[in-house]
Image (cartoon, rainbow, N blue to C red):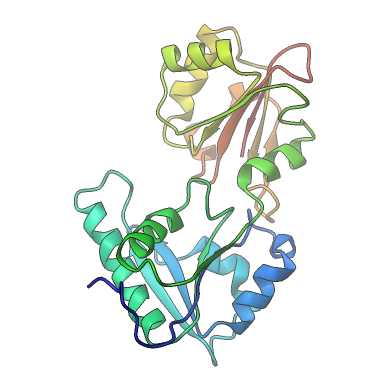
Length: 252
């Protein structure tokens, strides 16, 4: 139901980025908002009851005094995904219309490859009068660069961030047009990506970092040693020409 003519005071909808994994990387504002809101929505995948975002932010949430509500999300291309996101937006809107301030937590940053963007779209399109505030978080891209010690770009250089759907033609085009390329969430296609990199002459010159900033972080300098058992959902691949004589490849 659309909420274009609100008659009562509504709560504020907060999209809160909780960073890449280390709770100390939450901003002071994110910590304050999480402590102040009445309700926290926690995204979970259909395949796991655990929430990485909640594991990061739980110390700033009082589950005894605040309502913590898990909300299941499908993969982007799953059948019926659009309806699931619409239903989630409506569910969150009910609390907001009752006057409760609501936070939706997400790992990394809310505006970069985040499930929050789907909910935000639903709230803005169906309930445009509900106030929204987005609290930025440290993205996995920034964390990966920091942990590897490799700057992404410097003055005048170009950065591309691509989803994990790419073949050798996609990589060749990106390499031709950008100084640094970030390939997001490559765990399912990493081994194929490494084959493509080898064809382009880029293999064997990288760094693998898994779950950057957490106690599960893993750094491997030789990508040729990686196997399927090493892969992790929270991973990305960076190809950079900017600071080394040869390309550097980083996965996080």
